[in-house]
Image 1 (cartoon, rainbow, N blue to C red):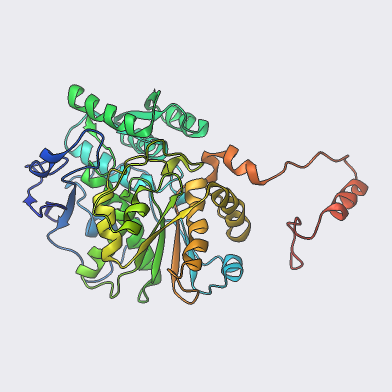
Image 2 (image 1 turned 135 degrees about the horizontal axis):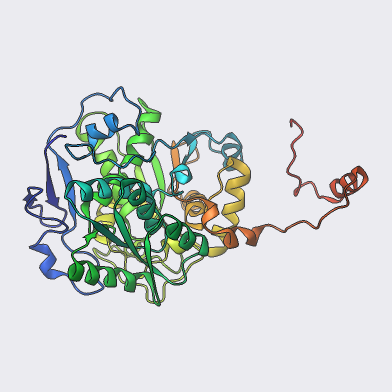
Length: 424
């Protein structure tokens, strides 16, 4: 493992791994209860490869070239990452974009991008000899932690809003995590997790608070760049809640530029629901910090955050990339679930489908050009929230078991409803 340091994203102070665990102690003095995180740390590797590793992008050999993996083999045996970058020809035609790709992170073990962060965090917890790891989550980070902790043989305790989708609750329980549904919001679950970790001495995986969450999520950018090398990408649309996925994407591209494996820097476009858009609101107003959105609500539970914890780092990442932010309605998010599935074969939960809904807005607002090289990051599988997807489909009535009934049903379907194609 290459040596690394922690750097405070606020004051720039450098720390050795043994000196700090979660945040910069100096900047954390300005932390307000329930506010955006102060003193968020990022990992700075002493050495990065000057050529693409020969190993596959998700292999331990590849990851060790870019990540602060433990010196001994504490990496949980789970196939995280290595998800496909799909050209999606039908979606390209529908959008009029010949250089459009879908990064399908629904293929991760627990079905979301959050597995990338959990893999590294659990590996470090095992290296540190910790017995329990905890996290607060709207759902996906909890299921990701539960899955990777199960593979690594470490106890996981997760705090989630009681209103989290049933499928996610079932997932995390099936993996064996201790699930603590909180009668409140994600923001309240986050604060409760902080208090519990301090009191009981658990290792905290909370997003952004643990610097390895951002570092782990950067692997999606490494994979995008490796798949498109030597060409780059002009823009990446990222569904955004707390801002850690986007910050991880930015960190991945920045590391590749630092070691000379990437020439340009893609613009990062944050996509947030209209009623949970603290980061996009700050981008539009030119603010240096965010104003919380009390009562934030959306069909995209993974993006529903009143106070994005990594808001400061996310704002810096977007602005330094020349990017922007867009907001999308719940109706457009739900509509994008079926559209994305029909035109790419990727079935996404609302948060993942928000990337496609955001692309339409970005095109309208001239933030993205149809001739540019664009990637949609689809962050979670639709199997996590079937009720949301069911809003756009009508379950067909049963037919008698004979061919006449089949012919009659097909005749009654309108051309727009047919799922067959003339070339099938």
